[in-house]
Image (cartoon, rainbow, N blue to C red; front, top):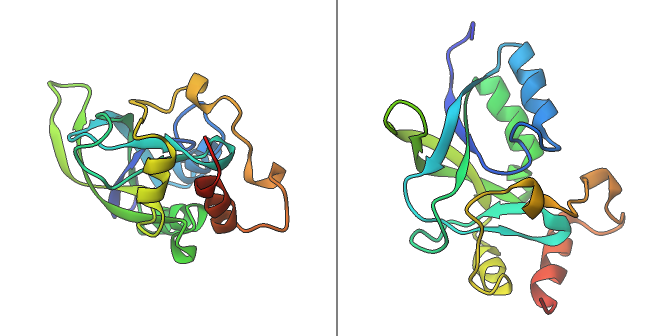
Length: 171
């Protein structure tokens, strides 16, 4: 990358290669604002669950769930701003928090300075309860089956309202 990476971002859901939001990372890569570092797995167990419309959420509840597989990207400040926008950070959809990951290649080197987009703390515990305390080790295509893109979801309800109605419904 021509400009220095501002952050290492661990992606575990729709931003991964082959999933619906990956074109944003491809766009950032073409402008020099993102580059693929490698496959990675969380150093600690963390719950990965699906919310409304099979949207994936990593929950900041260390010790629950599994070590989660994903991809690590180096991104510039401009790239990080675009990801923050996608993840609704200013709208309390997700929050960007530190995460320790181990790289899959080269003997599993520990990367301590990475960040990930976690479910916002306002509803994370409710999502875990709604998921019956069961998570996934990976957001695979099978897990993602039934995912509905943002533009195809019912209009007239905010994402937070969709989460609220999901957590209050029966599984």
